[in-house]
Length: 286
Figure 1 (cartoon, helix red, strand yellow):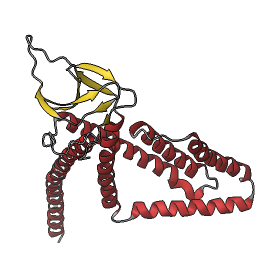
Figure 2: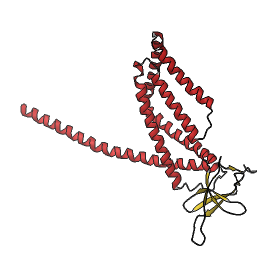
Figure 3: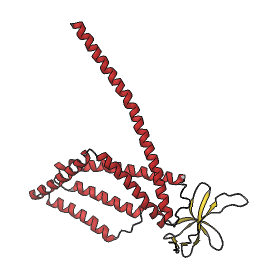
């Protein structure tokens, strides 16, 4: 009886070890497959973002089909760079908000949610002002930040009263419950991924238009009767158009020229800054 028991026990242990080894062998290739799929998806999405950015960037100048079929390494690298920054920013926001909003059920003050709102508002203002050149009035800053700091000051002054603690406690519990419900939802990762993809796509679409409309630094080719401005470039070609430097207006007469340069016939490009950017002359087609 004891020998049979020992044999059965050994067999059970052997089977358990074999199952563990098999699971490890299965899990490792699965992780590699998942990682490769993610890389392929992100690479394809990056090419799409580069095309969207270039499409909207050239769309500002009225270029509909010309030179859009070649995305170029610059736009792809730019899309990778911006998407990397967006991923890092989203991760930092998620970690910060989780750290700030998780212990709300035990808090009886509003400093955590108000500080989170302050960070989100400041980030929004920075992105709108720096990336999209949106003019935010001083009144907007005063009303927004003034309201936040007023609530924080009132919260600290009224924190001694029991009725205020009850109200704040209910508010914090509802916020914490809302955040927990979203994080624990079974489709949270799917919705977060879709929000990231759609948001990034929309960001590149609007940023392409904004960058073109506010660009001030251009390369100029001296020419008579009008100098030529470089709108876009690929590996060996330049997209140019005549420009009136005094009026800061581009004539939408676009041409593609070779960017080859030799000692006998050098292609001279000069950098010039146009304060306020360049506008495109309106035609009957626009």
